Length: 173
Image 1 (spheres, rainbow, N blue to C red):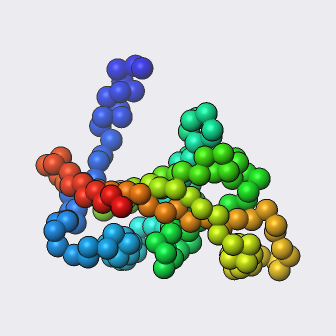
Image 2: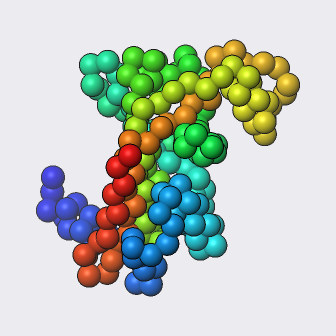
């Protein structure tokens, strides 16, 4: 790596100066409720696509890949829902190794949330309803479409601070 490239990377701005505060001892004890509050704050701050997250999966050999998806819901059983084709790379990886990690990142607020756990396939009816609810749906079924739920084993809420003493709030289930 050239010194000028490295220097250019180091010179890029980090986070805005007016970061929100975060005290893990105050607020909801339910991590899903804390996520909803942070999501609401991201919407109020004008964060684009705050429901977008990076999903990391691994195949049976442990080779990792990641891509961006949209959070569909957090269900009553605690599952963080997302959807994809079972025939996609991620669908194949989830069939081989049903574990994944989500990462939401909101640089405007200096916040990220990591959710990791086992992934389960939801019912064919739930998957079909999700497919039908897509904005581009034309009413035709898509039997390869699968609605999944990530069941958290752990979550981490991360808040950047200007003094670099970032706050990490980790919840293990």
